[in-house]
Length: 564
Image 1 (tube, rainbow, N blue to C red):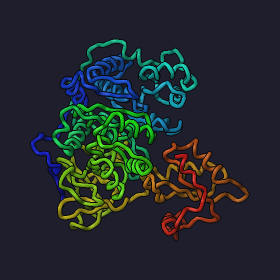
Image 2 (image 1 turned 90 degrees about the vertical axis):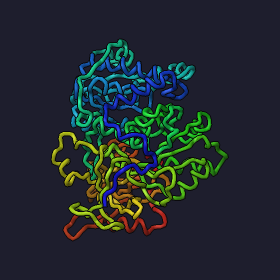
Image 3 (image 1 turned 60 degrees about the vertical axis):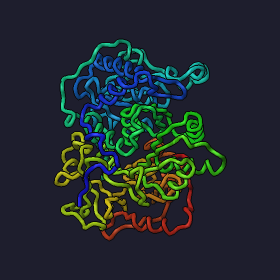
Image 4 (image 1 turned 30 degrees about the horizontal axis):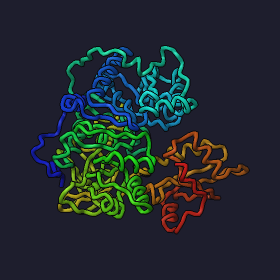
């Protein structure tokens, strides 16, 4: 049985919005021009100020040659630049391509070339700018917009940064390929776009491995993203739409969950976005206690860390009213403890990049289904189908592949018609996840068809790690599985067979991997073996290793999880 409708108990708010994504900001600026929009480490900008910067940056992007469909990359941590440049690119008619600043050069090159990114926005920091600068001449990238860190810090942090952190700032050449954010926003020239259909016009290329592990750009339209922001809004009480909420944004905005649940949803309701550039537990707790956020989207590992900190000292977390967990299954004990500490409702959502991403969510009231990922969001259908073929639905209560239809479902994958065709069946988006539905419409997630490892809310693909391990001259065979991790939910673990007459230690292989994959993807441990299990046809087999690890009381190997 397929389900549809608005289960969030918020009837009367109107239909799901299918309109230009920039309308979300324009409407918020018109309603709340003097209200705080962004708080970054104590520096604040009102909605009117952010709206003005967006208009200036949009004009700047037009001067740089952005026209309808130009791909512009955002390789940024959570800063005001993330919000301004995101909406400015869209106002100029461009397509935003989200990049993870932790990517190594090889990963950046692939995504730039695959997407056709011509302009990249990044920070002037030594850990970011040089990686992007190396792409000039190697890829189709032509221009870098460089955003200075010191300019967005409050006094005296900005002064201290310039004085004591000069070594953290990269040297940026003074040439045509490098444009400062100040130059980008120097002029305020009205930017107009020709009328376009938000249901067919791509706003964002969100790169994902889908269910295959091969990075592909999910084409998310303006209507996909405005629809999903509306759908998320339907799961919070009506009082949250008045423009007086404070949203804590520690999840990275380049990730699809934060893009929708923090930025787009937050701006739609006129909330103040309290942005942090990365997750540091002490800083997050300090911000919660001092700035009193009311909304806090996160992943289970964040809520677990806060629970642990609360066990050590008394914390004041009572400002929070609704928290949304996504990216990985939320353990019941973590949820119960967090709700006890805060008095807020911690609801769990489920989705995937190809659906902008939210598909289901726990209603805030009158819902008590332990282990459920909730019910479908407004105007969304979920069909539980026979795995692999997806030809027919399974009976209610039986397990099958979760398939989705709704206004938030992507157009397809960028320049990959065959992959798009494989991801859809008869108009249904195949998620690759196995689940079942109870008689009340609550959906429960069981397993994944593929080998994706969800590590602290991020997808980690064993194939990527395996291919990187094979680049080491001592590695003959390698396989990677997901193992239980009390903090991140799951973590990758690698098993390696070395070549005869070659030597390498787990630490050697870890150092090798650090130049090939991001910190998020680094394995919890590497175990070197004389032989790896294989199937009857000679393929490396993971299931025996998974069963062995599950049976162990502890992982008796070199554990370097602190590096990831």
